Image (tube, rainbow, N blue to C red):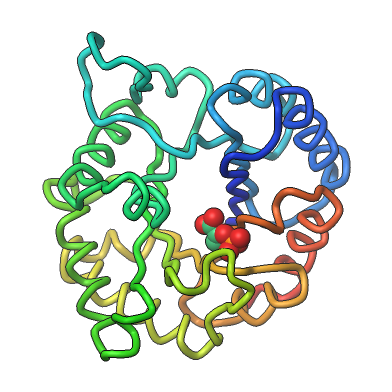
Length: 250
Ligand code: PEP
């Protein structure tokens, strides 16, 4: 069926987040298509989840802390807090790995905490430009998956997003061949780590996806949908992207 996730990053106020969520809801209401998730900033999660109640759109958080005990972690949000209002949470986004120095171990702990709170983690992996240029892209992604999925129950519900760092927010999306090649590699690693259960894991491509190029990604053999940043901030463009994803699903 496919999955399209909109990551709003540090955009929207509470008011504009409600308006954006409502506009997407109204435009796709009654349409058949991929599962849709929107990930607003923390402060809008509750309002957006109320706005979307009863619709076919799920809500995800953009981040969480790994700590499972409540307590003295000023400014942090736990999986237990998110579980009342979110079905998904993004972990390991490259912006968090880069700007906030998040390590593979920290991301692994977040993923495990999300799972034990009943939230589906959307794990982001992907290589930097210099890794691709030096032929290390596959190795980087393998080692991220190895480390980030450590200790996970084999039948856990997760989503994996391949997001080459050089393609995020740059307008330089990966070619469908590059994306499919890496997705095939990811499928092999997941099969090694998790066995048959891995076939049920949706694989998303992320990196400058828009309404014009979504079709070529979702028609690839191992791509089940997309993680969308910039193009998810305009309701019309996002809804056209969703419609184009369902038209061209393989
Ligand atoms: C992202 O935020 O994960 C992303 C892929 O952003 P963009 O679509 O803007 O490249």
